[in-house]
Image (cartoon, rainbow, N blue to C red; front, side):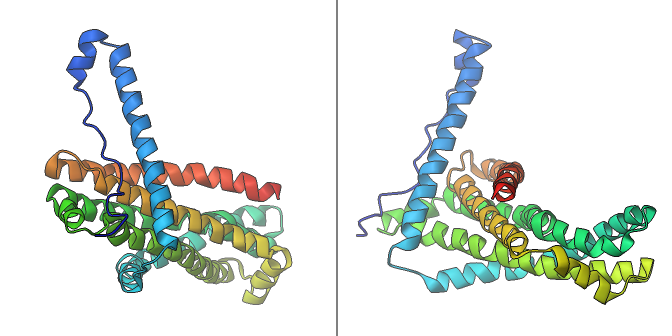
Length: 281
């Protein structure tokens, strides 16, 4: 039997019924109950994140499971990533070209568009769009396994659910989100260069030369780092919500919805702090 088979996401105690809390204090009791419940879930999430990190760097490894998850989560997300990047590049190029033309400096549109894509738009849009698909899919899949007691069966057989189910999914998200972000950068630049060439007559050479004059390696790496962090958020939140489902099939639906909401808010919060950090370096 595996020595770490017993380590798994802490089971959350079932919350006290609201009516019981309200019987003591209809207002304060319910509020305290909900806050303590949320803090308990946050603590469980942090503990699970640490356990996943330890298992990810310690043998035995499962490269075949990782490759499968990368194909399932990343390759199938290519269409939505490509569409998102294309229209993002088209829209911001049109907008910036229009406003810069008012001041007669529309030739600088390449600089603004590429900087915006690299540092902000590509990583955030990829995380929000692909993350919604991938995160909700992970939560639904693991949630279904939880309510049908497949996770308990894995544990009963002496296997580690975290190593078998969670680590490959989290690693796939960590690797694929930055890769999709880089792809979005390239597609967004090409789409932007095309639309400003057609709309404002700016040549491809002028567009890309202007971008190369101001864009630094740090601008590119900032977006890649954001993609890495956002990928971790997507994978960890989706797995945690799936493994802590309560309430049968209805609980799976709630977990899926909550995963999308929590992931979106967490990505926006992380984006702010990472931007503040990278700009201060």
